[in-house]
Length: 121
Length: 107
Image 1 (tube, helix red, strand yellow):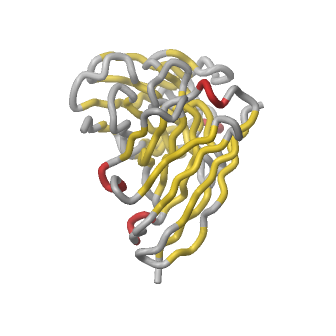
Image 2: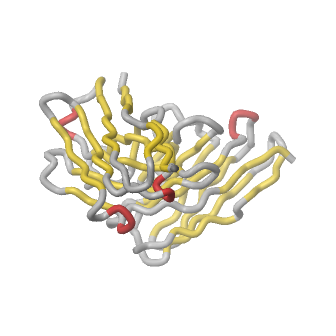
């Protein structure tokens, strides 16, 4: 059974940093692209960042470029999102999502339960 | 960036109704479109990929069609479990964008 478990969310002040982690199990992690998708309170879904299966290519939505860094460790079946210079508009539930077979990054067949990030003073 | 426009934003329907949700892309995305269902407090669930391929375990009363810029998700006979919010998403090119969602509510 595929499982994706996020951790690391919490309350942080504007300008602060946070590191999210996603622990994956139930599939061959190294064969699939992975992404972070967020959802602000009461709003829709927004893809944030993604990485190919090897981690050789990474992608970011414009609003987080230069502030967020995605990484993965295929030996530990984990993915991380380092978030710096956080802003109030980064407040959201952050989901870890597994890429579809054959897809570069986008298209997600399994999602974690999400971790809440709140940026507020 | 490719913009995804869903309509309607809200849909009121009764059990047994046939409902259709439309998703339009601002440029051609081929068949690289996915549909998701989300219920309150839950993570999204994949329903359909490659525009019309049903994900394993998803009921056959759901179907998808379209290519290029225009896509539809149809539920042939709405069931109580189908009241939720539905999102389309293009995965043709970076950044991978979602529609704003369609809430299917009880009439």
